[in-house]
Every structure is written in C-alpha cells, then in structure tokens.
Length: 277
Image 1 (tube, rainbow, N blue to C red):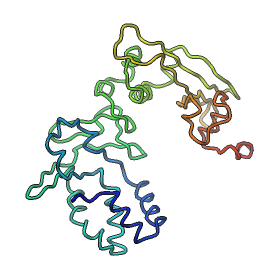
Image 2 (image 1 turned 180 degrees about the vertical axis):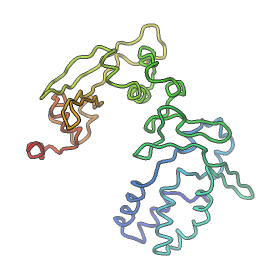
Image 3 (image 1 turned 90 degrees about the vertical axis):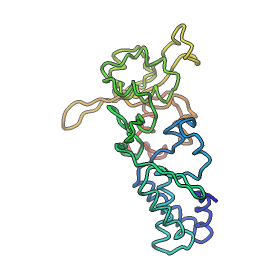
Image 4 (image 1 turned 30 degrees about the horizontal axis):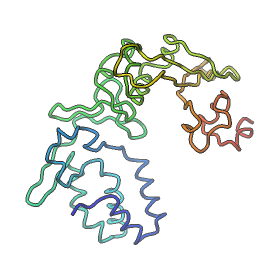
C-alpha cells in the first residue's frame, strides 16, 4: 500500500487543528526548493515498467518534511512510521519500492533553482544527472536545450515566435530580453501615465508553418521609467493581457497603464490613493 501526501495530511488534520498543519506546510513551502516529479523529468517510455511501482523522490520532500516535523515534535505515531521512507528519499534521487525489490537512482549532480525554488538556469542545465541526462528550465518552465545553450544575443526572434508552446515562448522571451524585443519587434502603446507605458506586441501567424496552431500572438508588458540615486532607470515587465488573467483583484480597467502598474506592485485597490502619498 502506498503512503501519500494526501493520506498523511488527512491523518494529521484529524489529530491536529487544520490551521496548525497548514502553518507548518506553508513554513516549509517557503524555505524549500521544488524538485520535479519523474513524470515531468522524463517521458513515460523512459520510465517503462517502473510506473507500476510505488515511486518516491525529492518531489515528496515537502510533505515528508511536514511528517518529520510532527514525528519529531509531537511523536505522532503515523508520521513516525515514515521515518525509514524519509531517510531513503533524503539519500536518493528517486526510489521504486515493491515487495522483494527496490530500485533507486542517485541525486542530480547539478541542481539549480531560482529564488522561488523552481528549477532555473539560463546558460546550462537546471538539473543534470550523472548518467548524462539533463533537464533545462527557465523559472520552472521546461524548455528545449537549444534555447539555453545559445547566447541570448544570438536568438532568432523570428524563429522563436514559431514555438507552439506559449509558456516556453514567454520564458525564452525573458531570456531574450524585453528591451531587445522592443528594439526588434513593432508594438503599440495601449496607455501611458507619468512616463510609463502599457505596450502590446502583436505577432502575425508565420506562413506555411504547421507547428503554429493559433492565431496572432499577442502579449503585453509595462515599460517603466524612474530615477534613483544611481540615475535614470528603466525596465520592461510582462503583465497579463486579459481581465481573467489578472485574477480576483483585477484592475477596473486592464487597459489603463497606472492601474496595471499598481496591480503589478501588489497594491490593493482600496490602498491605491494612500500608497501614493
């Protein structure tokens, strides 16, 4: 029988206040990287029959760390039974368990993450195993190797926009640089305020390209300018284009540069005027 994050959490919330369990989970979440599951790292055909095993790995670190806390601090009997699994997972990359047989692999030789714990590296593999298997990612988004090994200044934006995966396009555009994008691709100003601009890029569907399944590619960014003690500064920040993409705290007008800027800064609507003063 496979023990799981869901089953362990249900057990803990029956014994402890759910808010206590949630507080521990959030504290661990904020201080631990987020290793990828095997399903993300490798296609099913590479895993083969191992899919039928009870499989664990570094991707289980968060809920096992929660179990470790309750086993150590409160001596919870269910969590104490998982100590052996915690030790196995902490010492291996992935482990498959079935009666009479255990298969395990080593942890990655290289593992790089961004400040939010997501696999990330713009000039090499985010993860590399000792058998040579590599995984490339930009802020958690898996991307083809070609977009990583090639220097940003050599990226062909015309080729990049043919990439059918929108998440990959945006991740690589970040490496390409919005400033360079503005110098390369035509765009329109949707709105301006106090020297800042809300701009929209619209790229036509490449002709005779079967990989491109959608219509025109449209995305927006804030072009921000300010002055600090070091002098004049500017940056370009990607922002949502549609109201539903902003979430529940959507600006009243998503075409208004200042409202989108304040949303990007994380200011709630009721604090807009006060925040400025």
